[in-house]
Length: 294
Image (cartoon, rainbow, N blue to C red):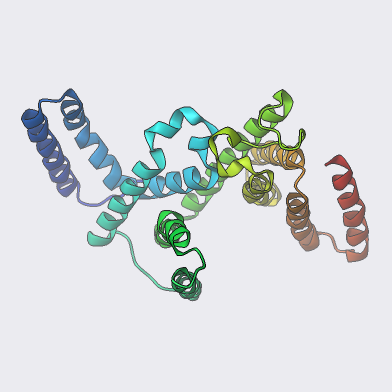
């Protein structure tokens, strides 16, 4: 897995030393210990940012989508998503400027750009314009930037494989916390529906949103398990992930989540089961059983 950028190490070293010198001057002028510590860590931080663009982008995507900092409130004051976003943007800009990342255009990116433009124009016609602008500037614009960043930085099969593993691991983490909350009666809605971070106003405090987030890694777990190119340990990891995520979705008692997990399993089954009539019958029975469990 190649997260590192090969590039000109001399330029990276110069930038790192310059950043350290600036912080050292600030520390001397302000006489604050925080700036002295930052000056000492600056070279490592700068080199890390310049040499690991994909790791930073994936980290930001995982923290933002799975709300890791809200699942573990102790991380919230650290503002990790914001730092990852700044590092990812700086690293991507460096990659583009130094021409180590090839910028390309495709039909999919054109379609996404068109959709992004439509949403952006819609902000000015929204009934609640301040709220629409806050959502666009605080969340949606980051989605747009990171979509292009992932498209340009994901260049090898190893990078895609690493991203899938990280997504599954994040899904397992969220699923385990959800099941822990269910067992201990923490943050339950209507007495039975599991949530995460409801007391701090997290997006995962809504059972339907929690189920939606868990559906994303569920699809990847099945893809890894059914792939003929994956190792035995990768398949075991995928099975563990699917069981955990599936159980957590059941615990949310979300009808949308149940329909989503049925659609995910049905899509894979449709491609592999030759007798479609039997498949439809089994799927109907399975859906009834799922609703009974929920």
